[in-house]
Length: 632
Image (cartoon, rainbow, N blue to C red):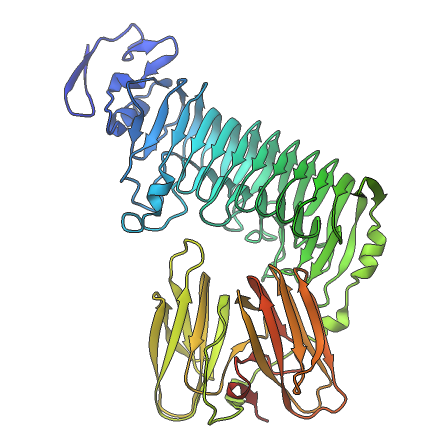
């Protein structure tokens, strides 16, 4: 005989069977042998896991197993009986990383169920900011740095993060016949895994905080690896963004080559794309090598596009798509987008074999690249079907229409801003409005004419459920570090002191939110020598064109539909980009070349990035007279 205590603290007497375990059935030791409590069974269930039993059966009781976070142990099988619900305790899970089940640094674990066995959390509860801090990491099952993990025949519901998370250097993970639905961030996230199989499963109805996809392969650092990964016979549907997402930009040439295969899967009826893949991006190191394969998959009914592939070049991992069907009918844009907006390299390392694209609008296939970037080598066999008529897609003609332009690339390189030489266009001008709303990292410049104190107001708006905490680095015209502060309120005023004439640089990181800057002093602007991200703006932005410049270039990269006109000093449009999502470069020409102010008329549904070419001072102002000019 051994004495246990139930969750309420009362003594519980249990007779041992010959095996030495409490209430051992033919299926294993029953978790209820360690007690059960209708309002909080955490200690009971954790005691069962900690018992050292080779097999723990979470058996049916009069109600759900309501628990706080619990932790799995090595060398154990956990079996959840038909009809059992393991439920997160409401009001618990206050820490950002609290998960229902966590397997951290364990090995040889089986977690399986039968019938309607369910693990569920309280997603809507976690959105109450009075009770909980914001988090996207309250997962139903969290697998970290673990080996030989088997998960099967379970439903996962309503987490405050992902249905399942697999990360760090987890190896030999096998997930089968799971149903992940209605999670806050992702159906399943993979940030690091070797020898991973996900099969015969469904990931649907993710909605809450980005990325909001069915499955997301998104490593956090170069040391993470994604090798030997197979996703087979799975369904990704009804998610608030894409069904399948690859975001591999944190990997680089030091990372073990990736190998990921998506096979016999369906991605349908998602609010964005069926599949979104981002392989490489601009950075100090070269992108990761390896291969991603999409085999015998179907994409249909997705609201934006069937597939988007970003950042593929001769330096990146390759993408191979075989025997797959893309039904883009009813989508908002082209069926297939190939984009190198975020990678300053020509597109390559992408091949299609025996694929079919069904469309109801033009263009069927679209290319978008940053300035001067084109197609180096993309090919294969892709049949495009429209109104029942199928024709082979002409990859050679597509490449010819999108040739690389080295000269245009030069037009956006080599520019230099001498902050010491910046002066107001009109020192006495009255400032009537603040800057447009910007997103991401950007720099606001402000000329200070003399000694004194100057008030600058930062107006911020949150996007989604992000926390408002935008760091700002201050520098002077020499680049001297003047300290940092954070924007944490919707309206935040900052007083800037100077001992004499100077210029202040405010390097702002919105962390996914948006910020506008309001200053009463003329001689201000937004730096646009690298892409400047505007968010949901209809505005006009002004910039000076120096003497002798005959060609003015502006690179435009919309994430969502946008239209931009380039206007000369008289207000006449000299170049235009119609409302579209593809990147474009506008070039304005002039014969007489005096110093004057031109402008951009911008209409953006959401995110659009603007970059001025090297022939002009790359600073945009919200009004014609309040901007900056560079003196000689």
